[in-house]
Amino acid sequence: MKPALNPQQNEISIPAEANPMSGPRHVAIIMDGNGRWAQMRNRPRLFGHHAGARRVRQIVEACPPNGVNYLTIFAFSTENWKRTQVEVSGLMKLFQRYITKEARTLADAGVRVRFIGDRVRLNDKLVELMDSLESMTEKNDKVHLTIALNYGGRDEVARATKRLAQDVASGKLDPEIVDEETLPKYLDTYVLPDPDLVIRTSGEARISNFLLWQSAYSEYEFVETLWPDFTAEEFGALTSKYGNRDRRFGGVKV
Image (tube, rainbow, N blue to C red):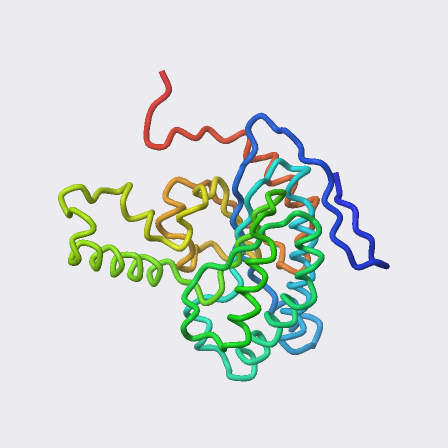
């Protein structure tokens, strides 16, 4: 089922939620291929990033009819600062433009937006917009959209470990009770369920430092489609395919 979009009103239209028996509740996406998509059209890489930002709306709309309650997207990694200054600057402006343009429509559509990642290196205006959008949508529950911005899995674990160590040092936390259930409480994603399905577009078969702790038992799909061409129909097909997976989490069915 393709979600409806009213282009004249520029509104997100989210259909009623489906109730699949075994579909993924949380899907995470590594949105790869924007630059190559633009270069194939003899356009600058930022042209592809703008096309990719527009694609996000369609996938957000596709979540409820496919039974997806949580969507996490990888927008900018801690390693992406290594790109040219022109591209990085353009991406930061794109993020600000996206939040400004989409804030009201996301809020009205019942989407709750969260940002994960280290905000220290981001400019004050962008952080202000991020805080505002989180506050504006904090009571929404239709779709939980998490945007990973200046995010890296190793950086997240390092920051979480530092906070955990500070609590141990201050006496707030007994080191004898620290186990694998403790660290997740210090991660950026502490309020989110672990992703059931991780999708990477563009044909690359690597996880690129994304949700390293959280995706320990996630299912993965690596698809050839470049992100700006990734449709709601392909998203729906992948979530349906997920229902055929045999997830044992290290155990054996008897």
